[in-house]
Length: 430
Image (cartoon, rainbow, N blue to C red; front, top):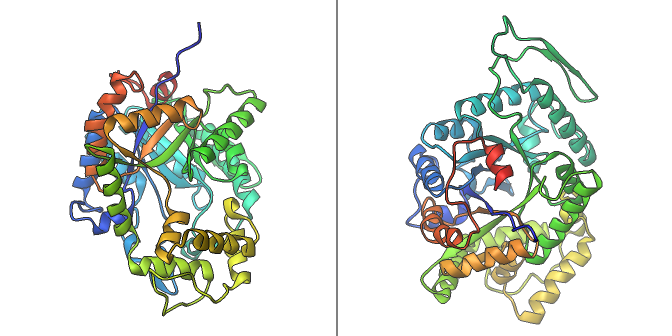
């Protein structure tokens, strides 16, 4: 008799889409602790497996100006999640932390402390990249080529394994430990008690094949933001194949897709609601800034609802931009040709073409429609779980928790109880 499919992992993202959140009248204060607590309690009561907090180490800028919708800055994740641990019971806490711009002993200390405070609910979303402006915020500057970032990240995890188990009960004093490698040389004794988990749940976020291979080897989950279900299936297949080559089982590394969900009483209402969110996401200024970023030119007279610029981009500058993104490493002229051909074939305006190339998919519809879509993603091997990326905070997570989760539970797709256990145990036993 074939084994029943595993239930879905579910997480709640905060803050979601900042552009929409800042402009929507129902959104609550993105830097108020009460908003974080409402979001966390909604996820906790609905038995979500985790809260997911993104991290940005610098504000987004364009042409010397800070983009207004990023001023909330995504505050320090560990500090916020430590507060949330005290007002929740089940939900875990995935913290996005950069292995390139952190030191391992200090980061292990922070994660271990959160694990102790939360009774074993700490997790790390390991990232190696950062926006180009980030390096100016650190004295080391823009260091480490792309491949070396993952080499450093691997050593970072080795240090975590060496120091994670802290001061053991009954020890007169903690035992000094040592690690020596190419990137780190660490000697010291842990200053924290041994955490409940044998190690934190490790999630890896990357769109590159190098990142996927790293996740397949080291992580418990790989976080993806796919353009569509076909891209998700391709990533799923590659990560699981890499894991198998390394002797890991298909369930040892979960593929978790970050998607936007729009819930309404009818599918048509949900689609209309999503179109309204898109209008909020792309103001006239946002459209112009995105075209300027791609064209690598100042375009003060660009009409957001007009055609693409007739002037050619600065291909040399665009090539540099594309080369810094492993997922976009391609010929800049072919990239722009794709934009122009699509815009001409479908008569798309600047606003429409920007939406087409930058908007990730949203699953819209009634609770039943959304549940059917999630089941389809799971059954066709596109994802093992999902991170709900709300348009409005905390309303987006509340709507999903109150309307979609019960349907998922009725269909046996999601858990109906959450026994007292660590996040690692919940992750593995779904």
